[in-house]
Length: 292
Ligand SMILES: C[S@@+](CC[C@H](N)C(=O)[O-])C[C@H]1O[C@@H](n2cnc3c(N)ncnc32)[C@H](O)[C@@H]1O
Image (cartoon, rainbow, N blue to C red; front, side, top):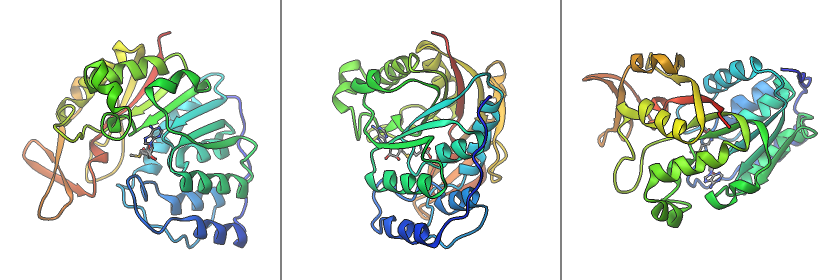
């Protein structure tokens, strides 16, 4: 790492009230996903009253530290490109704490406005840019290059929300994911990748087979998996790391929605470990290097 951190700055009352005005009151898909309140707190160093409630499993801080630890160990990293960056939780922190130049692509316009406001309010806008964009199989070639790419929990929506025709044409989601990741392999040297497995018809792959299934797709698309992060001490939301060579040691946690509680129950074999609003805490997080 060669870049340097940007000094923390207090959040002005004007920016705070503008932020609260920008937070959408209606809830659509992917809304209230990231932890906006803790993002504002870490960026400012103080807590503030933000009119927003995260509805996802609260693992942003843990995932962020996992990514940051790996990025700081890489030589010569200056830039990051995130696809589906949502409220910019990861990019804004990487800019402030590591001085990286970040481009965050996100189709929810309100969220682009919010992360742009935060970047301005915290004096990060010389390094941070959020753009309202749908990244599709067809336009990956036009993306800017960056040292580090981040693609977390986006591509299991392909075939349902976007790229439906391409998924069918390529012969299904696994072939699509391989081709999509192959295109990304020429856009950056390192990749952080995470995906779900839910689809309208059937699961894309079994939870317990996720490490091998996804590591196989990554390898075939030109990415060497360095290590895999897993929440293997549930209900504690901490990530453990497994190098690719030790993938077989990863505890096989599976989950399913409980129709009575409407929560997702997490199991190891038949033992109930935890219940959360979604299955996010079961998804492996991959850190990879491009073999191109
Ligand atoms: C499930 S959320 C994950 C958010 C974030 N990556 C994370 O893991 O915390 C998926 C995000 O990807 C965005 N998204 C959906 N389709 C996209 C596309 N085709 N290109 C870029 N972003 C997309 C959504 O708006 C949303 O912010």
